[in-house]
Image 1: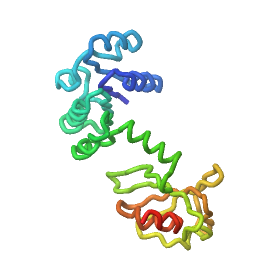
Image 2: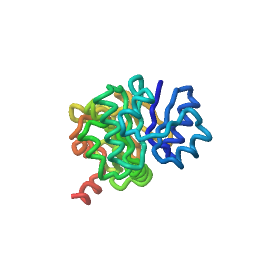
Image 3: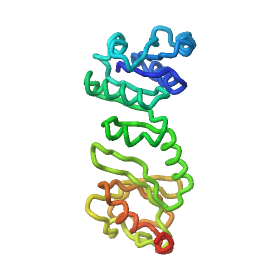
Image 4: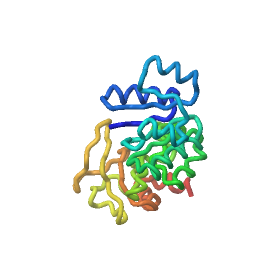
Amino acid sequence: MYVIVAGAGKVGWNLARELIGKGHEVTVVENDRRRYLTVEQELEHAIQYGDATELWVLERIGIQRADLVIAVTGDDEDNMLICQVAKEKYRVDRIVARVNNPRNLEHFKLLGIHPAVSATDLILRLIEHEVPQYGLVHLLDLEEERLEIIELIVGQDSSAAGKRVDEIMLPDGALIISILRAGTGFVPKADSMIQAGDEVLVVLDPGLEGPVTAHFTSTESAAAGG
């Protein structure tokens, strides 16, 4: 691939290093002269000095042939603009944007910039995974495909505990795709038994979280939540 990385901070620099190591052609664009000179000592010709929000800079580095544009500057407005221009003007197939302030995530989504990655949001999800307060972790949104993947911990006295997969009456649009038990994961069959304490991955249509969660949440927890 030919990849353009806007921003030579720690994220952009490390991304460029890894992508080059995997054999991809990479150009990093950095508008801070001192930072550019620092990174240029390692990346040499793979970094260019300039402002990636300027069309002439993007054209100079060959955005017309880019397979992927990654905007990881420290400014969310710049990242939005770079990705919008890449997607709408130059028809770049794949874009990735860094979201510095998670409050701006909705703005990226409204502009059709996807995926937009918020480090704060990712860390919060990891915290949820390690310390699940409600037994549910929202793992992934596949917005273009209109699907979600969630992880649920099966409650001791939930309706799903002790039942076979085909006995759990999930709503249409929801499917159990994996069970993690005692550190080992497996793809369940129709006759696989669900046990209390299992971690269950479910793929579902948006809006079905409530009905699906009800099957796996213990009645005690559900009462406390109400």
